[in-house]
Image (cartoon, one colour):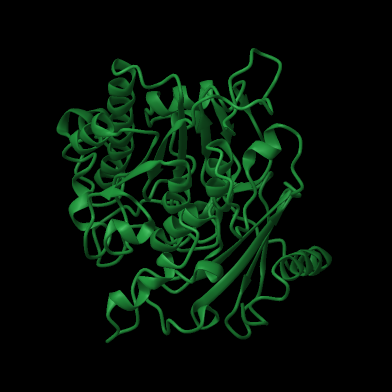
Length: 418
């Protein structure tokens, strides 16, 4: 069996495999800014349970999601593929096209729950899931059977955790739980007891509600972890935490369509595409903070690696275990991404819906718009993490070098069809 046991202090992982594959808890935050955690240094927002996971586990503060739109991002987490590979590039189909026409995309992709069945895993979908019935993602059990966002599954976290308790209690073998509550996602309706901590004179009430939602989401994580501890299920448990896409809360009087700032969700800016990633569990190794650039395309390969899945389908990501044990073949100084229309113009060709491509290489980040006559943007993320100063005009040689890196990585896509 190919799961990594815990070794003391000086070793990250061992090639010796444990007797039993680990259970896996995937926690997916929703519409959550990369700075908005205690462990990422936010001065106000309290996230003690995630802080503990980050402190005890392996934290990647420079994690990225290639596509900062929730449906496309979730599909990438599940498949280890970029959006132009799994072809889930939008939230909604073109006008007049039924959503069911998009469902074969995930059915035909190497979805993580389906791969885990090779190791006799039972898997449970809760919360956000855009791809119709949970079976379309290879889940053996689930809450969502239809519709947009996740329909019946969206009660998880906000109203109850009991479905997860029931599934785990009845499981007869190793299990994988997809805990993807629509939190802190709107509607921002935190409990009054939490909102009181953030609703201060002079603070925009919309911002206070969003911050309170962040703490409430963390609280639900704590409740789930406490239950697992009480059931003595933490010893052989891999926990993965990630956010689907970023968020910068709009403030001021409410206007239609202004829930978030335009340079966050569904943009190529770090406020949209950056997310901390946490791996936690004895099989992962010693606690540490890793500054390398990593991507959500790496998560599915990481999980099937830790769980000992023999089948290795085509994925663009690489297991983060290879990085931790020093065998990585990937240049961890660069990550890539692509941004698409929220509502697709066509389902036949992802290129038609593409609005931006982006690459971060070491400290520099290049954003390439696809609209004719638009200009690229270049930022020094280390010196300018909020991307306030565009350096493209003053560093044309860097723009050219990063453009080549981007096009070489994807073999010219989307100039060439995928």
